Image (cartoon, rainbow over all chains, first blue to last red; front, top):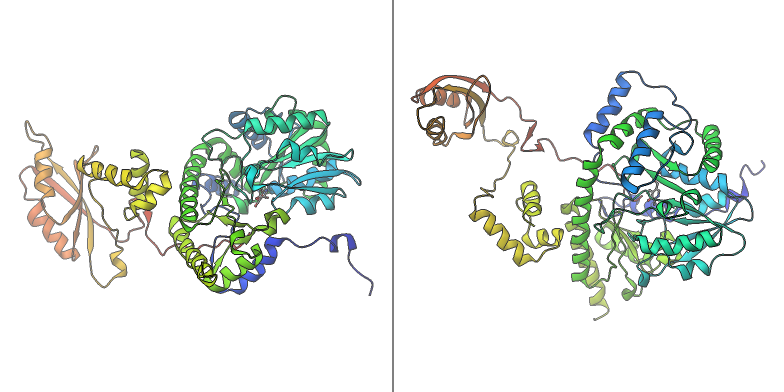
Length: 392
Length: 159
Ligand SMILES: Cc1ncc(COP(=O)(O)O)c(C=O)c1O
């Protein structure tokens, strides 16, 4: 038989999270701090709208770009929350999660020879999607000492004459880092000067604990028409399984993205879109409540790691902490595997998010305080055990 | 700090003050003092455990009773309410608007005991005009808590 596969695809390594998942799922009754999705249920009033839409028989395709009603609400939400203006006709596409939006954006914008700059550590899909689009990913290893923010120097030193797109994602998975207005302004200046575009994955935008609203790089002067903003319902509204996200950007790019979306996907799930209309209209209070709860757990975990003597930079967004375990002289994967074997606690090794995640762990706090306490107690036992062994 | 402490304690009365302090980014000592003040001021009126008695061997009967009364000159409803709440069988009593005056919740060892209590004690109080007893057959949600087996985390372990 001949080889059924595309060798190009075969060469892409599987997700580092996936690899660790396979190890964890072998382990019976492990406690996990490994999830990348909220522990809350989707707010009831949102689920109810989904149910009503089914009862009324709204089970047909929507227009390719998504329900007009939903695009209008997304436009209003972007204005209300981030002071961004997008025309629901032609500048907003409803997608199957932020995931699809990232994929079609890369495919619409990049071609062979183009370089896309991807700061790491980062979510696992960016690099493979860039490769699938035929482009060359150029990664920037971000530094803990800069609180995992992208600095102008780092960016400048990775730009070549083939660089077309800069990818950023703040608040960040896995580090929990945020970038504030001043940080983004310096990046925007370079982007404009070097005539680049930005793909900004802002899926965690509502989960920022700086006390100030999230700033989208698209809202900075001169950036709107250079930026494609990806966002979605998974994290802010606890709607991961509904598979719904969206992309906003200049018409010219969105038109081509819509073409890919139309051929590959047709439209995002109809039931989810009806529920999402309600989320956009009446969900601000739900977000605020969940945000407060995450923020409380974040502070609790930061205090607990500090007590353990495990340094952890004060992350201000998403629902992850990224403690540094370099003092134990083990790789992240070794540490995570041993922790799983000895104390049955699953965390994700930082190295799953890029080489610069080596020496760190991703700890999710999308768990109840009760679960967090249990898991942290076990991590404490594990860490104490390691120190004893070393006679420290 | 007050509002945050109350919001957390309302959902979890057993939380360790040290953890509570951590959650809201305050000093443990300050939090302890604030809780004490809240108790002294009667803002925190008590702590209690929600027990799902139907899962135990002990039998309990709960009833909700609509009570109509004639308010008394000068003291209105309060004096009759006080007469009613003195009974340990009464778990809650509210003055309400609408077709009757008090919503009274009673817990007893059996339906018979509750029925006896209503006919012998409650309805004979001066000023009580009528009572109507509704037995509670099953509790679904109480004090914001859904009464059922704890929910399982169905998320995949690592994602
Ligand atoms: C940074 C980031 N972007 C995008 C996604 C994809 O989200 P979805 O496709 O559910 O909208 C995730 C999910 O974990 C994420 O962490």
